[in-house]
Image (cartoon, rainbow, N blue to C red):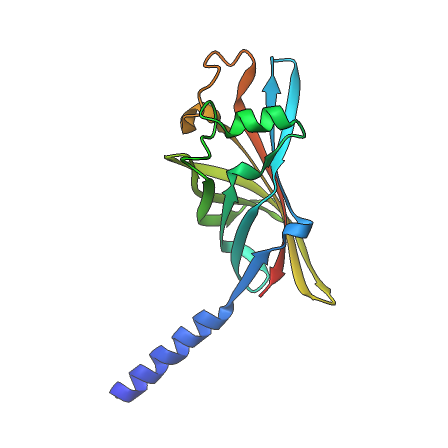
Length: 189
């Protein structure tokens, strides 16, 4: 009887292990973008150029998926070198002290709309970790010569002051709310 229970346990463990599909971010077909108001009258946008990320799914379904990413903050790009250097400084990200930001999901749930999900997780910038929720739009999967791909878009808004990015405390020049829009294509591993 013990052998039978052990065998059943091993089979169930194997099934659950093989049911998980692993995906890796394809940086050539992905982008991590942000938008923030400037002087209350316009929007400045930018992105991060160096990042890694992975996704674990049940087959191709996003429900109950797990996702994480790490971003090298020094790769910030707003197409204005002086502004990028200022964003890397102690006034904003302090990249010498805090070189990375990260996100680690805690759960993903389907909404009542087709191909739309809520992704919950812990977002860390500098020495602060906050819970955030991304709205996720699932683009589907496609088989290509170099393997299977999965696409999605995720959006959220954070308050930069929550992460000790407190230059311009009145937010008269640089807004407080940062819109994050992530376009991701994953390669099946």
